[in-house]
Amino acid sequence: MNQTRTTKIFRNRQHGFTLMELLIVMSIMIILMLIAIPNFISMKAQADETSAIQSLRAIYQAQIQYQTNFPTNGFSCSLAALGGNASAGAPSPQAAQVLQGDLATGQKSGYTFNIVNCTKVTVNNQDMYTSYEATAVPQSIGKSGHRGFCIDQAGEIKADLAGGTNCSQAIQ
Image (cartoon, rainbow, N blue to C red; front, side, top):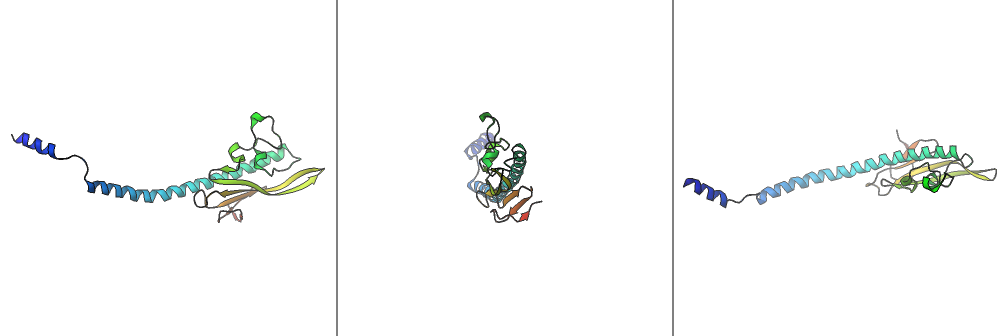
């Protein structure tokens, strides 16, 4: 008889968590999220900055290849000219096929890329670019990156701490 009484009491007792237990668990989860989300955003911005630096190095290498392949043109003053699709035919000064497609569009990993400050000379009625500057600017300062970056024909990457193109601080 004692056994059935214990079984009845056990069956009447509800299973699950109390409201207080659920509130405590939810509070702990919210605290963890408040700590983790800013760190995640910061890590993403840092990864985008690293990608921008590597992309500028890729642009520099593509410029060297372009100059080697098309010496009468010098450097390219256009990202689109460094890109191009192999299925469209042989490489040309307008589509050299030396830079990956996503970077040739000027947008990659939260940064906008551009080639500016090109110096042009005319040799034998042919325009030749003797210098350039490639820039990488965050699309959303603070979210996709904090700093802007620049590289020129010398290959030195510099940063603008304000996120623009006024690059004056050398990157190690």
